[in-house]
Amino acid sequence: MNTNKHHYLFTSESVSEGHPDKVADQISDAILDEFLAHDPDSKVACETLVTTGQVVVAGEVKSNAYIDLQDVTRRVINAIGYNKSELKFDGNACGVFSALHEQSADINRGVERQQAEDQGAGDQGMMFGYACDETPTYMPLSLDLSHRLLQELSYIRRETDLMPYLRPDAKSQVTIEYDEADRPVRIHTIVISTQHDEFVMPGGTITQAEADSRMLARIRRDVEKILLPRVMDKLPENVRRLFDDKLVLHVNPTGKFVIGGPHGDTGLTGRKIIVDTYGGRASHGGGAFSGKDPSKVDRSAAYAARHIAKNLVAAGVAGEVLVQVAYAIGVAEPVSLYVNTKGTSKVDMTDAEISAVVSRLFDMRPHAIERRLKLRQPIYQETASYGHVGREPRTVTKVFASRYEPTKRIEVELFTWEKLDMVPALREAFGLAES
Image 1 (cartoon, one colour):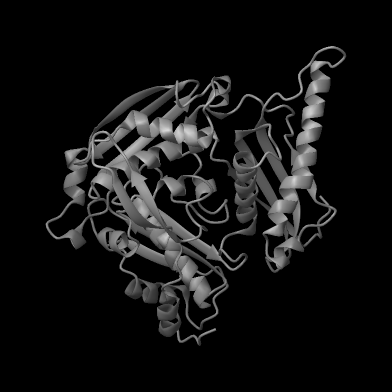
Image 2 (tube, rainbow, N blue to C red):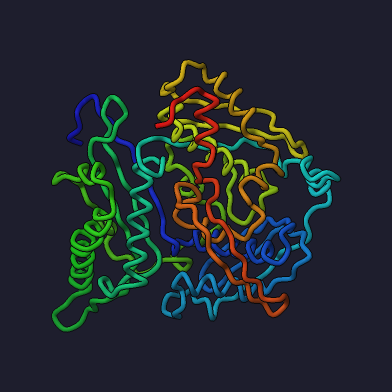
């Protein structure tokens, strides 16, 4: 493996918006957004299954809105790029089966309260947030690069004719070599697997094996000469320097990848929780995000924990931070909040003392999180591919048109938990000078 004996390798993966599990996540979050657009107090837990020619949507809803579930589902599938019958999964032709029903009154009783701020947690469990100073996004480099590769591949597929054979399903994996001080020293291995058209056909003197070999050679060449340079051009100089001529590159290592998407594999909501978060570099409480309204602390508290971790690192409190928060169902106050600086603290305080300061500065009751991070807006479809964290906060206008409800144009803030709005307060609390 050609690494210094004191160095180690760490790997993260990502998947594209056309991966079957991500198709399911995007449908669940688009349905959630539709409910929130027309009734911000909606309670939604929406699970989606996609397979050859079929979508099943199931779950619990409490809302005053009525949505066109078929239309929302088909719009999402078509926008991803599954809009041709040859893909064996077509937004215009697939079956859409709905099994959404009313939310359990027992759960709802534990969540809703006379005073909004007393709103109980929608479930028990522990959630984690993480940040490190490895990249400008305060994300692990292996995951940051994995996402970037697939986002650029998606852009090439949608907006250019540089790689005209691309289909929506793709996966990436990046391995980073670290030194003994836990700093990245080089990009060791990149894996790209992308679904593609059968653009070289056997016939005449061309055998199937020869056709497959020609396709693979073209895709590998395009990944080397088109995809990688485009991604590298957008990287900071210190990351570009980590690419060298010893890079190991695997492109479609199984060979041909024509059959993909929900026809190739069944997709389910919530099966890509490590891709959604920190690429394996941080702990995970096990709860998925997509399809859940923010009363579900699996989602809202994980976002709030990321907000804390990112602001702590940006403020200079530590170089790496893992935040754990835990809840009991129906109880507003978290049962615990712990900050772990993993030995990278830059202040003369124990992790327990840092945790106490954080608990004073951040109200972690579910309603307070919803209000602070503006989570009752229809902001969730954008989270359902390329990571819920490490993204750029921005304001957009979204339009929700339905035959059952008046058309809504709503200005929303995306990825509010990525804002560095608490850095000044944290610097003051920890006695750190402005940088």
